Image 1 (cartoon, rainbow, N blue to C red):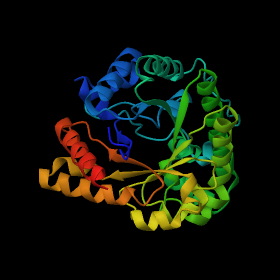
Image 2: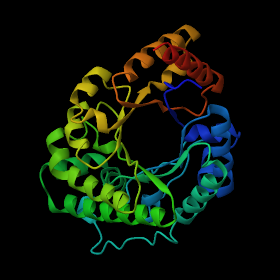
Image 3: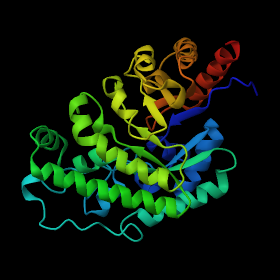
Image 4: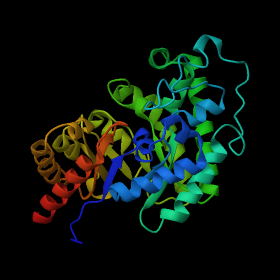
Length: 329
């Protein structure tokens, strides 16, 4: 294998279920099916990183009482409405027991089994929700952002609850010897402005990533999608060691905005719509990506979230083209 090979991380969530021809919700709720799907993911795509989880933003919220269900066999479970409103928060917000509540135990056991089966071949990490997205799941995104901008006490209260739950869940995963990947898409611009992120979310991300650092997790990925370039100086101050340059961002602008480019791993994603286009498009996109990742000291090549119906052969062909172009560099 060439020494300049770029690590590979397609974003496979609901598509995991397609790889074993099962409904998404079944795989999301069954430890054995989830491990089987992770094994199929590794065999199909030879990814260097695997994420244990499918509907990654529901685990914590569901344990709090949020009801989620899938609208079709190919869809991820989703909630029809938030659990609470900011005007109707309970007087007490007790944390669910991460050792017993909801799907927490299933996720831990699936993580353990996946590491045992696949940990020698690739990095296995269990998904955890960041505080901004978890709070939005519980009370609704629009109302949360407005209340944060106005510095209203209920917003601070639900964000503190979400952060404590995220810290507790991450600590439980680490106690079980599992690495964590933190997802917090609601923190991305334009939903959250750079100023609002710095004031209200950055301190929470620091707290969460400190839990991972103190428990010995060396690579600490914080996945905030969209065009996060305007917020990058703040994201780099969270303690994360891996950040996402999503397909909505300009790679060159992202590279220029990194405060300490040499110290951060950057995963550069391609748009998953690419895999429904022609082979010529696959080849062109692979050549572009091979050039883009050269701008980063520690790059990872990845994709946006692959739809359930993605043809694996298209992803595999893209990967072959990518390796061809990176060998030339």
